[in-house]
Each structure stands twice: as structure tokens, then as C-alpha cells.
Length: 122
Length: 397
Ligand SMILES: [Zn+2]
Image 1 (cartoon, rainbow over the protein chains, first blue to last red):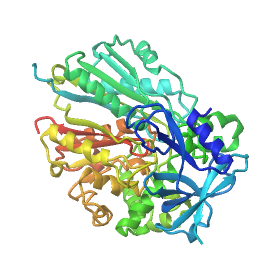
Image 2 (cartoon, chains in turn green, purple):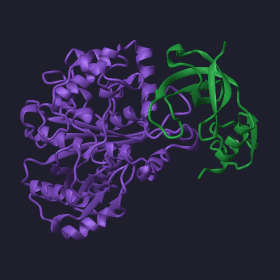
Image 3 (cartoon, each protein chain N blue to C red):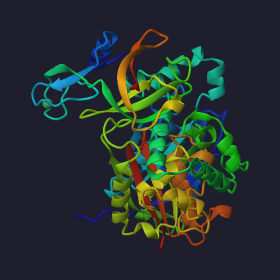
Image 4 (cartoon, helix red, strand yellow):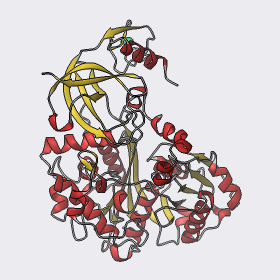
């Protein structure tokens, strides 16, 4: 069971598109995407591209979890002007530093769900 | 306008914390009875009853409160089943206090009884417990849940990582918090952990989500507790009653990991603390003893700082210098805290109230802070997305 905005977000992601909602009424961009604008309370949304580069704010490794069958590195990436995105990180934990510039990619989980991941820019 | 009535805690009770086989309803009935005996009141004198679900990883029953009212024969003017995560029973105390202040009821019993599906049983039978694992995952929004998160552990790990990074805090400083909390718990006969713990043991325990190590985590436990609140009339003639001198609640517009801003800061904590202290007429420096809700060793110093006990980045050295233990300027988490007293989350706020009430009554045994007069309780929900702070005062203080 997933909300409508998330269903659309992950459907776009499966096509390699990394997008979120912007309010047509007031121009506010939100992350995560939503069906109601908290700034003007309007309900008229359009989908816009998110930045595909950001800064690594924090990272860790998750041992036990659904979906991930081995320890996955997870992190928080700050997209300028948008905010923090909780995401998979495609790099060994020991190679990562707070403040590293990272770039977007998609990742297909063992159960076939397309999610986003970021990796340090080479 | 009529002046608000004073509200007191007249009775407290808790079970041992650990893994229990007892039915949560019966465990709840026993602590309710014990809290009423402690206050010298009968069920016919109790006018409100509030409780919570029986656990997170448990096939919980709904409407546990009316069942208890029936069982104990209470004719209530307030009945509520609360589910606000870790803050649940502290929200309950807050609501009960307001209703008593308004004069709508003269007393209210808040209780929680938690019995979880033990982790080893879940691991042995993943499929049989899959609905509970899915339920745990559904706590998080779609953009956090998609990555399979089933506990807030990775979020706390990232907050601790940033805190250590920003303030150059060493891993040993964080590990020492767990050691000290265990030292406190050794003096608590009802604590879940009663074996000494060394710094080496903490530092050698494996990472569960770096930088958080296994022995720096609180574990989910079973247990029950009850707190009985009364108005002035019932508190009269009871020298052991402890006054709730101030209480406040504050929430940030976040749910688990914040999408904006610094994730190692928790502004709701300070807002709740300042408001509760202001209402109480006390300064933070007056607080002799505090129970603080830190679910991980690294979160403890952050909470001490957000409450205002120490400047940002200074709590870890304060802890190592003995300033938060027996003989220090403020005794924090004498119960052993969430890490070593044990952490049945729905029950936890009531365990914190129980400890501070026992301290202010002078009934805390070996872990008593001499002549404690003012106490503070801090609770939180989610990823410290919301906080409640209460300032308690010994009668006649
Ligand atoms: Zn808008």
C-alpha cells in the first residue's frame, strides 16, 4: 500500500527519472512529493526534475532490514535548495566522508524495486 | 478566572524490566493496584484511566483501557487509549494533569504494560512474524520505508555521526556513557541489566549501524508501570505526594529523519524544557535529578545539551568528569536510563516518572541523591520529533 505521490515518484524512478512535485499555485517545490502544498494549501501539482548531484550529509550501514539482503550503506544527501534525501549509497563505508559530492543513479533491489542511490563523483 | 488547581503524583509502581511471560493485561492490573496502594486510594476514588498498546512488535489488543476499568471497577470521567510512540504515557500524564487542573476529575491513573515478541523468537520464525516486521516498516513514510528500514537505528546512527563530526567527540566518549549508565543500573534492583560493563567491552562490541555499537543501544523490553495523579484534595495529608510544578510539550514538523536542517539538533527538546521550567518557577540549575530519554549512548549527551544542562559539544566531557553522576552537579538517569534500566518504550516515560518521584520522596535506596528537591523528566517520540518535559517538586520544597 503506497500513497499516490509515492507511487508516481517510484514509477518515474523506474524509468530513470528523479522528480518531485512543484505547486502550480505558488511555485513551491517539495521533497518528498505531495498532493497538497503546505505553503499555499493548493492541490494543483506538476512534476519537476530534482538535482542529480548533492552533498553527503551523513551515512551509515544497515545490518538487518527488509528488502536489503546484505548490509547496505545508507545515507542522507543534501540537494541544494531542496533538502535531505534518504538514499542508498553505492560505495564502501570506509571510502565515504561527510561533505563528499555525490551523484544520482538508480539501483534495483533484490526484490525488483527500483530505488535511488548516490555515489561519490569520480 | 478560577486559578488552576495543583496536581500531584501520589502513587507510582513498576515491574522488574526484562522479558516477561505474563499476560500484559494482568501485568497492567498488578501495577495499577500497586500504584493505588502506594497512594492509599481505592479504585472507587480514581476518576480517569489512560493507557497505550501492548507493544510495537506485538499483536497488540485495542481498547485496553476500558477492559482495565471493568477489571478494577473504576467509574471514569476520562478514558483514553494513546499511541504517540515513545511519548505515549507522557502525553497521558500531560492530559491527565490538565483535566485535573481544570477540575473536571480529581484523579487519574496512567499505566502501560508492554509485552513484545522477543527478537530471538522473531529470528527463529521470520515468516510467522512477517506481519509485525511489515508493521514496523510502515511507521516510516514511503521515502524512508522503501529502503527497508524497520527501526530508527540508521537515523540515530547518522545523527550521532554528525554530532561526533561537528564537535570532535571521540568514540570512547560515547562508549563511556553506556558504561556510566550501567554503573547506575547496578544500584537498581529492578533494572534489566545488572552486570558490570567496561569501556573495553563497549568498544569491542560490533557495529549495528556505525558509529553505533551493539552495547550502545537500548533494547526493547517488557514490563509495566503506573503513575497515579491526584488534585489537591486527595494529596492533602500525603507528605509523599510530589507536585508537577511545570509540564510542556513541543513538536517539530518532522517525522523520523528531517528533510530539512541539521539532523543532529532537536529543537523541540529545548522548547519543551524552557516552557516547563518557566511554568515551574525553577531554573535548570535547581534540578537535582533528571531522567532523560536517550535510546542510544550517543543520544544521551545530545539530549543533555538540548535540555540546556551543557553547551553544545560539552556534555561528553561533562559526563566523563562525573558531573552527571552521584556527587555531580545534576544526577542524570540514576535508574540506568534506557540503555541499562531497559526500554519498554510505551512504559518508559512512567519508569522515568517513577524514578524521579522515588528520588524526591527519598525512597531511591542505594541510588538516592541526598536531599533531592527538584526533578526533571524528559520524554520523546519518533526520532525526537517531539518532546515532553515535566518539572517535579518535593512537597514543601
Ligand atoms: Zn503552493
